[in-house]
Image (cartoon, rainbow, N blue to C red; front, side, top):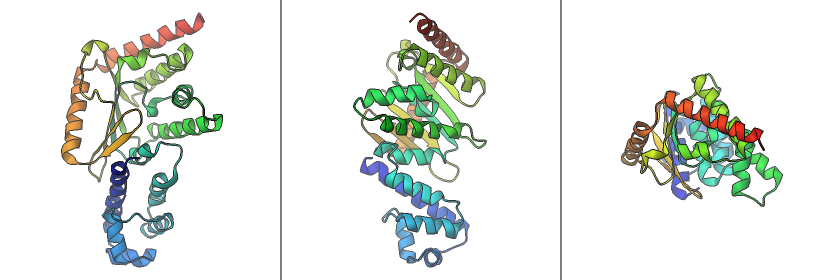
Length: 277
């Protein structure tokens, strides 16, 4: 993860620590006593000047009765190898989001991927790794997708470029299953998906993937990603620009009804292709 991305994630950690400490009616000094550090240390955690060790995060959870929240976030930031370094913080934040808006110009977003598609993407990017490595990455992606099945799942808005529907990742059979999966989620009203048609030409956010995340008690964030790096952004002015870019993308996309028809048509095309090979 770029230093800025990891720092933004630790700042979110600090904001959550401050909010939950205040909700518990504790001063920094009082919480420090309970977790065996000074009140000044708690202040440094909240300002993301100092990063707490895992055992301190565990004691914070115990003191604030936060059901392992700070431990989980700390673990994600420190040692979760299932995700690229620059993406680990995003995984933790998306589990806390009330709404996620995503634009995918080249690949089906991870939250929508089936195992076979995720496996094909992983192998394409890492052709010389072991099967164990591939399965670790795939399991991490499928675990992330569980948030869409929770009763408290976030609103999930996705704009897919039409190229994503046409690129046969994993072959026709995999694509047929993948697009059928997305169509099923749309019909169940678990996700909102719109397709940006190729005929639109130039479009906002041509630099790569874009994701916006809203939270109940924290400022919104934006995340941008290219092939080899990602940036987590919480600067309000930049997040506002990213939101405008997403609004332009959504405005240029097909309606959800037309998008569903196109997705199901593409799935059927791949299905027919698979049956003849």
